[in-house]
Length: 438
Ligand code: GDP
Ligand code: GDP
Image 1: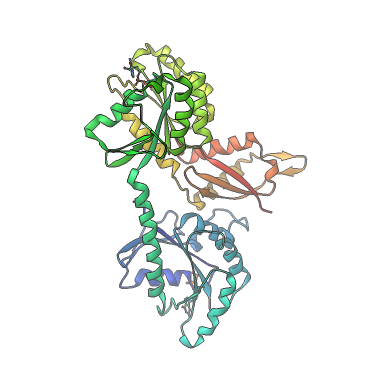
Image 2 (image 1 turned 120 degrees about the vertical axis):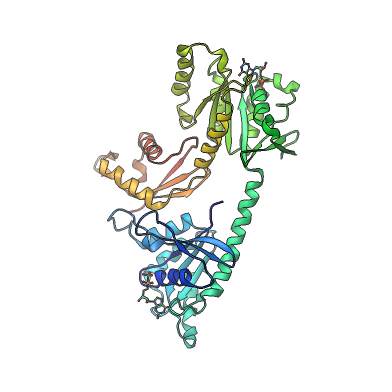
């Protein structure tokens, strides 16, 4: 399980590195330096009261560009909000609030993540009155500390790790049922046969639990230590009349399953090839923004390399809207290559949940800018200032640009292709947003 992340943000000179070093050197904390993602990034693993976490000093994040906005204080705050579970915002108790502090506070007030407002350099308990002015930042009670001497830092960490424990339990709950999978596709494509293959190996079924909709039965299975829930498989293992109802199967059922799935496995009958109905069902999964794996089943019935290539080509040509979905050819009858579905699902899910650090994204954006490919209308030219990931499952990227209205479908596709080239996003859709920033 990934360690929870505590980000330390604040303008230069407030004492961020002193604070981080204080925690790093405290006897109670076990800390060791990680080889950082970038040289400038301060990145530690710490442990407080038995709770391990990552500690990031966002002041050290290199944006790889000299654009004023990118190196600004806001960037840091965004990075903190984007990547962390808990944010420690440090201000200087000696100098009081300044405009940069207000800038950061404005960003932090919008996040639902826990934010600790830490008034540093409170070396002398007699000067406590100075902390009250920081209430103005609208971030709740200020914590008064002296990173230099260590006053107050222990109490602060006690509170921080209490929050981190909550983050961990949330993760555990999610992990219970593991990855939610919907197996969709036309009747007779081989869904039941595949489901039986996927669930019968090594007596993998953990439990059958009632799904959230009437007559839905979810199957929880374990494979190589990972849990998967195959959602709404009623009627798959035990065929019912419903199977004969093409409309019902193709749409209502698929949609219900897709609604609850992280990953949709679209089963196509390879002996028939891609049909309109397959495309429509894939369209639903794409609309609902599930990750996707395409399974070409009954591959044993497709004879010769030419026929095989033809089936694959048609998918490449007509399924461009889910071009990110890996294609796995299987034979459910014999079980051949069925194990590859697991690998594809794992990759798709990992990418679906992927979080790309802001600094890497902005190095990438720098390359795009250097490439010179942009859009313009009349005299107006699109300028992209900064990009950050603003959601996961699926990943969403927000671009801060001078003129969002200039962005067209072509350009979005260009950016998507470039993102996919630079970062592994196989199996997952991505979303892009464009916001105005002068
Ligand atoms: P950063 O730029 O935010 O990482 O700030 P630094 O950690 O480099 O600290 C800036 C200056 O403030 C340094 O000279 C520190 O020694 C000083 N400083 C940091 N914390 C404290 C503190 O708690 N009390 C006092 N008096 N000085 C501090
Ligand atoms: P579902 O309606 O999508 O659940 O499809 P089933 O799993 O019930 O399979 C429909 C028919 O195709 C059954 O007769 C299966 O035995 C057969 N079938 C499934 N997978 C394969 C395969 O990979 N190769 C061949 N030759 N037949 C298959």
